Amino acid sequence: MNDTLSGPDLTKGVAVSAIADGSMLTGHARGESVLLVRRGDEFFAIGAVCTHYGAPLADGLLVGDTVRCPWHHACFSLRTGEALRAPALDPVSCWHVEQRDGTVYVGTKVEAAAPPSLGAKTGIPESVVIVGGGAAGNAAAEMLRRLGYSGRITMLSADSSAPCDRPNLSKGYLSGVAASESMPLRPATFYQEHRIELKLDARVATIDTATRQVQLVDGTRHAYDALLLATGAEPVRLEVPGANLPHVHYLRTFADGRALVATALTSKRAVVIGASFIGLEVAASLRARNIAVDVVAPDTVPMLKILGEEVGTFIRRLHERHGVTFHLGTTATSIDDGHVTLQNGERLPADLVVVGIGVRPAIALAEQAGLVIDRGVAVDEYLETNIPGIFAVGDIARWPDRRTGERIRVEHWVVAERQGQTAARNILGGRERFDAVPFFWTEQYDFSLAYVGHTERWDEAKLDGQLDAATQDCTISYRRGNKTLAVAVVHRDLEGLNAEVAFENAN
Image (tube, rainbow, N blue to C red):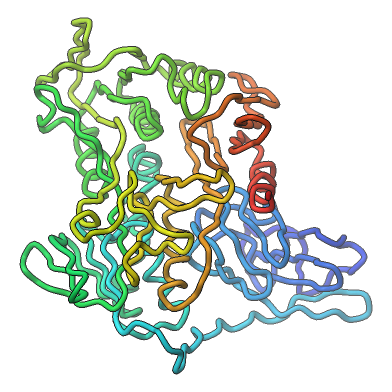
């Protein structure tokens, strides 16, 4: 038996009276960790560990017949183990449960169900073309197959690598904790086995909406009955002398990550231009490699507009305690082989420069195709554009948000994956509103913050708890008027999940 297993052997039974309604118990069955859950008079047994990053589901939240992961808010069915919401893409196992004489027993494992059949359902497209090989496109392709779609799926990715775990590029991969082998979301065989035609280095030149064809830059054409645009975002380029030197890096793709790691292996001093989430995560990861880091940004406080002054000041001091030097209220004016020059003439030594000054939605194809543009690609609540049969998801999509009453566009990994899943259902004839609450997380050193909701403007950031060098345990509520629009939590996973549910249930 696995030495890491904990709790009771659930095959030997647990007294029903020992498990309160709405509670979860971690135990094991036949060498596997199992979560036993009681909802009323029913009991469920599923795998105890989230299939995304391995979080213990017992620390999560029960919502109806589901459990939500405490770390990154994946959601699993208690009845089937199905992964209902990204970022988890794989199900957890599910076991038969039996009650006898006041005792509940976990029995044999339930065999995975075959994908449903769409049968003769009308309106199903014969072919789906997905433009983009990131989070949204990959999630859509997988969901189409999970729903029983048997038609042709073609994923056209401009990247040279298969879909990868992009959030980890600036975290575990750059710091050296995550190996290259762990970065692809799926092995190459997955796409073959699921008949997903993944074409890499496939850059689309034009979309012909009249003939329903996309043309690549090499002249190749692909016909579609339904088209999903998931082209993502592109890094904003720094336009100063020396910005194109070989030791200047951006971080968006797996290829970018490999190139950055290769340079970091021989670097001693780095300058990070931009105090965005990606810039600060890069700074923390480079410090893990014992590289001296200077951060340059025009902000007076890091992340001021998003997180507020109190949290931004904490983050600055966190980095300073780890040896990072900040140069705020300024920008870089030039880069040479060994230095970055600032506006005030100061020259910072650097054999590695990383630029993280924001991204822009990649909407050129959508514009060429005649789609409505509104600081992104305008979609309805079903993620469909103004041209029937063409959907847009991920970093490019601007959709009507019920909670704010505004159209919003969100550059978050989890949002992109969930939009891809919703779009897949709607491509197959569903009428599912995209109404998921936006969620993202950041990790810097031993500091982790999760952010639930969305607001581009807020009047008050109210902090409950402690956030200092000694104690990191708090909730920050971002309010406009008398309405809370977003919540950030530090080491309060359950509060983050409860905030998500509250936002979902709000009028």
